Amino acid sequence: MNRTPEKDPDDWTTGDEPMTGPQESYLHTLAQEAGEQVPEELTKGEASRLIDQLQQKTGRGQ
Image 1 (cartoon, rainbow, N blue to C red):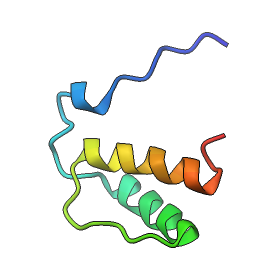
Image 2 (cartoon, helix red, strand yellow):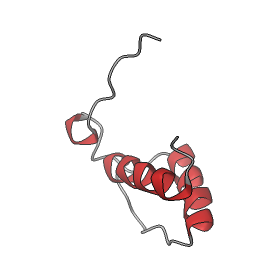
Image 3 (cartoon, rainbow, N blue to C red):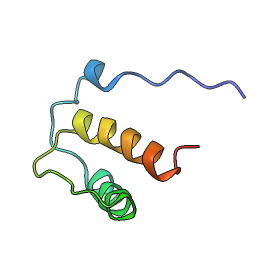
Image 4 (cartoon, rainbow, N blue to C red):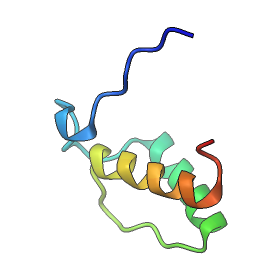
């Protein structure tokens, strides 16, 4: 499978914008499974990094 490497959220031009609705929804699902809380007012970049962390914790990122 030929995939383009993912760009680091720190390099996103929109990374400092508020997280998207789908990011927020998925974060809440992952956080519930992981027994974590989702901080308020995350940026797109912060949300992406947290999603990665919670996916690893819950096993969904495999």
